[in-house]
Image (cartoon, rainbow, N blue to C red):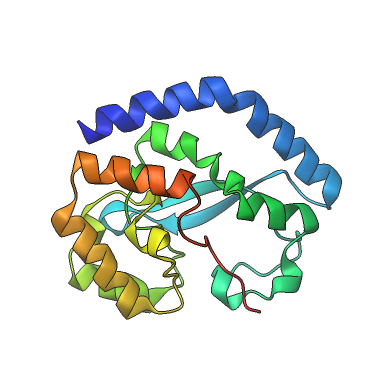
Length: 184
């Protein structure tokens, strides 16, 4: 049921919001040098690496690192607004449609975040698709504390349900969580 929901909702989302994603990608490109949509390797289900798509919110020259390791000065003016409204996540609808991600699940991390990958592997978290949003994100827990994050992710995996996922989606849309914070 979850995959059917993910596929249908992401397809509808891309059809209805494709114009907005395109417009925002153009605005990002005009705001700062570089592509409008950013492609980055992330760790997915069973530890497989996939290409995750987001609207670019940082300057093109920013080193590829976890958000909590990146200085706030790396975020563009438009990027700050996109992150605050969580609009930078919209291109991930393509990842959901392809089956690489789900709407709800543990947030996908970078392959270089080995401690988090190890902690998630130990707790069975890598057995599920990563999500655009998740329990830890709604609680405001980011990847700077890999053990705590893996514990919350494991709690989600053990207790996940369709109604619980819908609740997390609604909490995210209503502004739950702070998103991926950068280093102050």
